[in-house]
Image (cartoon, rainbow, N blue to C red; front, side):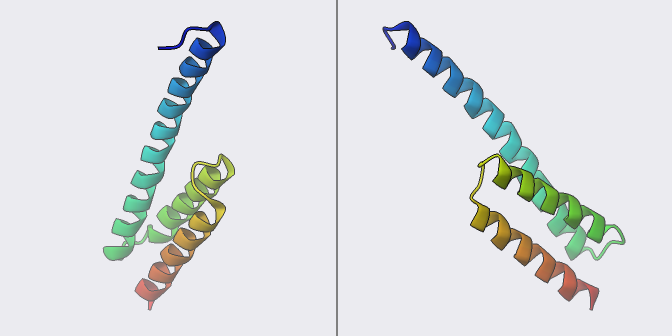
Length: 87
């Protein structure tokens, strides 16, 4: 356990950040799953759900929740699946 006040504050901040990051990751993963399901079922709103998932990926990369390259790779894969399902 921390002894100094600054250490306690650091611990408190890291716990808050961890909770915030976990919540953001859950939102991101659920968005990706929803988009994948929409593409697989070839629903009419697949394009819209993919658009929302891409926005979530961009937001996550901006907040440094995931790396920029990872976001780009996931966006590319989503669009590739969407375009294949449209054919």
